Length: 162
Image (cartoon, rainbow, N blue to C red; front, side, top):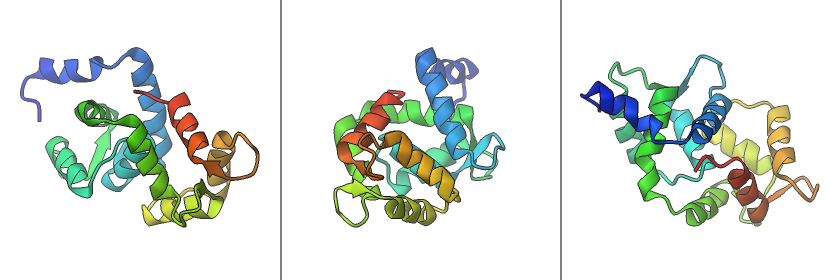
């Protein structure tokens, strides 16, 4: 993707130090194995939760540009480059609403434990029930055990990197 090493170095640096720190937190959340890389299948859900609307084709294209050794894995620098590439196309509120709908699989207007567990499983992720409970607890301001659209948006914006 980058032939000029200086261009490669400069790309992630266009993000603020706070954005880079928070991107690292998001990356680590989806680096479920602790190996310092995320797989292509983990990338889509990571980007969804950050409010980026991407298609499978977008993911394949971005990964193929960065994954020169065909491992289907991306390190943190690759993750930053993908975020940087997607920034100009963002409509944050609309994308957050669309991301919410992906998690609200039964269309109730709320994300339940069952919804989140189903989406995570469908994405090929392996989060424990306790990890899912912790995610819901962090977002759930009313204490009803469910995440509304506003709570979802608040969670993402409170932890927003962009």
